[in-house]
Length: 71
Image (cartoon, rainbow, N blue to C red; front, side, top):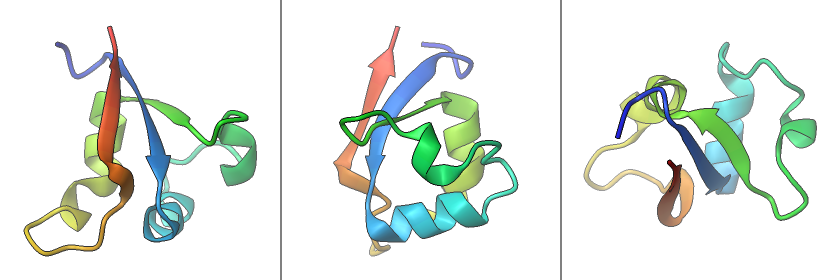
């Protein structure tokens, strides 16, 4: 596993607001997810965008708390 590896994830409504507000979201938010609702990013980008929003008791940012590794 390398933090440059790609990951896929679905966002909750809370996660979508964080992603939209992020300076890292280079793409139009709706255009960046695929037809199944998955987003693709490098792991380090996901960590940078969502890291401060993930702690014990936080609102979920990923559907089912799931990140799929694309290795």
